[in-house]
Image (cartoon, rainbow, N blue to C red):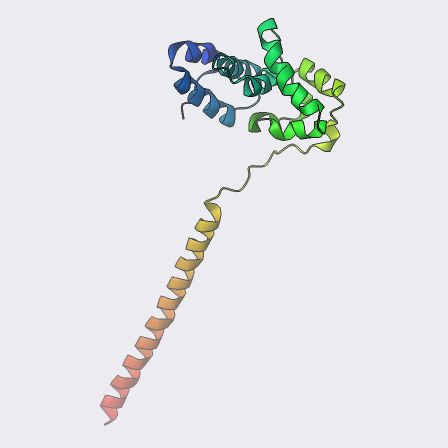
Length: 172
């Protein structure tokens, strides 16, 4: 994953094949704090690739409103207008879910309020979720500790048997 300076989002889209620009921007969306320019660059890239629903999500969250974005944004929002609006939050990328509602762009907050979104119902994911490899590490750590304990006791037993046999050989 390429983590790049913020001012180069538009350059990434213009200098790379769409699939590569998509990979780079996706990686940065996962790794960075809320960034309207990054969300707009990714949304506009998706729009150029005709992925209007996904583009609408990122363009909506960017807070940047251009006439060419309205169709994709409306497509995204309308999909949640027919359902429980609180579910819209689960569709947001991790960048947005890690951000407190108060830190969203002002017009995004206003639009969500107009949709009857209740920010008090969400819990901002501030702590890092458990790494999938953590249980494996715990299991390996336990295995190593028990292996060392087993080795210690088996060495103790072998040493004891060796000493006893030495003493028995001296007596006989």
